[in-house]
Image (cartoon, rainbow, N blue to C red; front, top):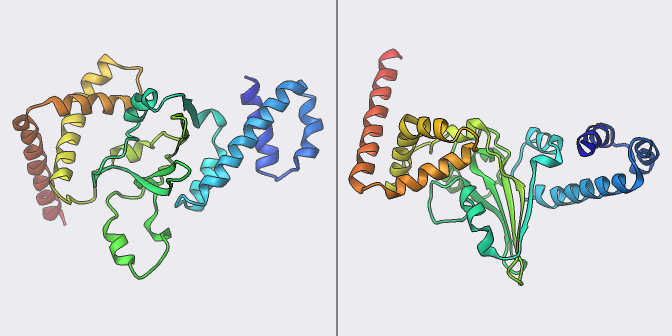
Length: 258
């Protein structure tokens, strides 16, 4: 409760109007005791410091920057594990284990192997027009797999030499982002992604909604993915073929109406 009240006061006065903390402190001190006030301010300073370090590497529109800055601290993830193995299940749920799959939505925006840092951003939150222009701009454009819908999701993964791991970021993909499929089939792997989408949205999601009404959308997708991987090749192929036929029918209907 204290944290929520503090966020409203602090961000409305400091974040929006740029008021100096020295001027704010006497006012806030009337609302909170010194110990709690000091802790809350330090937490917000830490968040602000991390965001400043990260934002320069992310490809964000001005609107996205404002939206991220307006989010309450509680919406961000900042977790640390003593062992990287302990974080495996969390990484899997949020699809943060990087695999060499062209259809994955997380893309590396910054990497420093010496410091063990890897910064990821959702492709649906990347406006291709903001990418640095260079002689290879055509090649960059061809790699735009997902439509930009303003998703705010990003994750900074820090691996320490003592095997600890820290994950900081905003891991909630927007509803529009979760509905996005690749803009075009690139290879067989992408076709499997289309098949999975049909299997999930047309069949398994309804079951998950009834059986697990309280788990997040990302956890439902993770559960569906586990079952999808356990299906026989023949059954998965049938979903892929069904999706191909469905898209052909939709294209034909669209052509007739134009």
